[in-house]
Each structure stands twice: as structure tokens, then as C-alpha cells.
Amino acid sequence: MNDIATATLDGIPIQKAKAEERAEPLWGAVLSLSLGVFGLVTAEFLPASLLTPLAQDLGITEGTAGQAVTATAVVAAIAAPTMAIATRKIDRRHVMIGLSLLLVVSSLLAATAWSLPSLLFARVLLGVALGGFWSMSAAIAMRLVPSEVLPRAMSIILTGVSVATVCAAPVGAYVGDVWGWRSAFIIAAGVGLVTLIVQFATLPKLPPISIASFGALRDVSRNPMIRVGLLLVILTASGHFAGFTYFRAFLEQVPALGIETISLVLLAFGIGGFFGNLAGGFMAERSLRSAVTLAPLLIAISALALLLAGSSAGIAGVAIAAWGFAFGAVPVGVQTWMVRAAPDQAESAGGLMVATFQVAIALGAVFGGVLVDTAGVNSAFIYSGAATLLAAIAVACFGRKHAS
Image 1: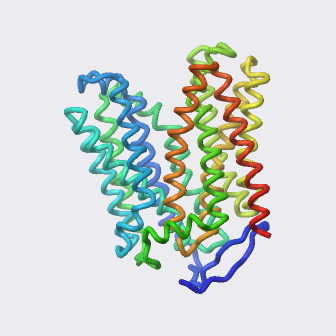
Image 2 (image 1 turned 60 degrees about the vertical axis):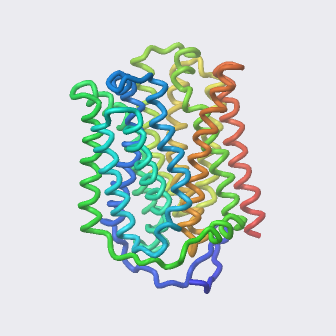
């Protein structure tokens, strides 16, 4: 795998490995990865919709219970770049099945947690599974389908993220209200079990094709196109979460919407993300540069629309739905960019991408909170628009520069 040929796509240098390429796509195996991502992201977001009953049952504050989400994100950021190294000699089929099994175990432990430490232990296990599974999914997708349909495969895999984003909070809240908060985690364990069955049936043997190491992480980080991709992630994800975290506050204060209307607007955001994910895969197959440039640009335009005309309920609703559509397209384009820039080190590239994404989530939410507290809710959207616009400019300029 050291013999490399260079190809281009829309002027983007793509390192194409001279390895034997799979002639026919294994869509069943791709679907199993989508199920895995769906189960993991659903489990990650569940505590946010169950904080009140969970905190009351465990005898802790809601703020303390919220650290269950933080713990998962922090561990996922660590696991993402190191999972490939820790499992460098293990068949990737066994690794992904093991991570799905970890989802089942962590969900069952959360469902039976009796104290904050026991809950946090379950969430740490989930963070290991989430970071490892998500970071390696793109590298594995490369080995399941021909290269020309890789964006389509990534779109299918990341549809699991979009569906989980739309469903996790409302379904978790409903199930928790009807059957208790523990039942929501039991359902998450059931999703993990279904994923395991599908993976056993569809994933082929995938022996390691390169030995991951910390040196590989260092080498990948020196790749100019990888650096452009990481810059895109940090700007877009931090800009998105700086605004997304405070959608409800904005809708309550500026167009002054009621909770029922706000719920509909947030549902429109989630539905927009689902279709944006599909559109992102479609665009990436045809023009990867356009896919990773237009998505953050549309977020910037949406933020500007909220700032200039957000007092109109209709414009605010359309802008947030468009924002969801744009952000839904981001992961497909970014992951395709990363693995095509370094296919022989795709696992390391994916790990760096996921770790950067998790850090950007935390930075965006924290920075947005500081802005909201000190300068008002509109200031968070000013940052969102500026950061995502810079992301689009960076890809358009630096991407073309390094391509030449």
C-alpha cells in the first residue's frame, strides 16, 4: 500500500491507492454501518431529553446529569484518533462488531445505573464506541464499495446520524414519560442488538491493510488537504453549534414564538438535515469541492437571514430549515474529502476528523454561551455566520492553492 498514484477531482488532489478495488458495492454492509451510527448517536443524545426524571431518580441536579453528555463527547474525542492504533492488528469486521457490542453493554448499564458514577461509567463506554465506530466508518466504506460511489455510501451511513438527530430527543422524551427514562436506554440496547445481527450477516472479513500508529497520525496531519479539511471542520462545526445551541432562545426572544411553533421549527431543522445528508452525497459524487464549499456558505446565509429578518416567523422558520439542510450535507462532504486525500491512512484521517469535530462541538457551544451571556443572543449568530463563511472561503482558496 505504499505505491501511490495521484488523481484529481475538481482540482482536488486525491491519493488513490493501487489496491484491488471492490467491483460491486456491498450495500448490506453499508447499511449495517448506518444502523451502528444511528444507535450510537441516539444513545449519545438520550440524556438531553431525559435530564429531569434521570436527575430526580439518581438524586442529582440536572446540571450534574448533563455531564453524562459531556463525558461521552470527551471520551469520543480521545477514542477517535486512537482506536485504529489500539486495534491495528485486528480484523475490522471484528472491531466494528465489538464496538456495536459496546453500545449494547453501555446502554444496559445506563438503564440499570443506580448512581452518578455508574451512569458516567456507562457513558464512558459509549464514548469509546462512538468515537471508534464513527472514525473508522469512512475507511471501511472505502473497502465496501467502488470509489465512484463512495459519497453515496457515506450519505447512507451518515443518514443514521440525521435520523438519530431528528428522532432521539422527541422519542426519548415520549418513551421516558410513558415508561420511564430507563426504558429509553433499553430501546437503545435493542437497536444495538439489531445492528449486531445485521453486521454478522453482511460485513465481510476486513483484515488490516496498514498498521496505524501515532506516527501515521503525525504524517496525516502534515497532508495539506487534510489540514484544509480539519480547518473546514473546526470552523463549520464550531459556527454551527454556537448558533444551533441557542435556536430556542432566539426563537423565543426575536420572533417571540410559542413552544408549539418552536417545536415545529426544530422539527423542520431535523427534516432539513435528513434531506441535506442525501443531497450532500449526491453533490459530492459530482463535485466534491462544491459540496464542501456550498454547505458552510448556506449556513452563513441562513445566519445572516436570521440576523436581518429573524423577527418574521416565516423567514426564521425557512432560515433554520435551510440551516439544517446545509449542516446535514457537511459530514458527507468532509469525510469523503478526508479519506480521498489520504486513502492509505483513511483510519487515521477519520480519527483526526472525528476528534476535531468533537472539540469543535464543545468550543462552539461554550463560545456561543459566552457571547449570549455578554452580548445577547444575536451575537452567537454573528459568530456562526462569520465562522462558516470563513470555512467556505478557506476551501475555495486553500483547496485550489494546494491542488495546483
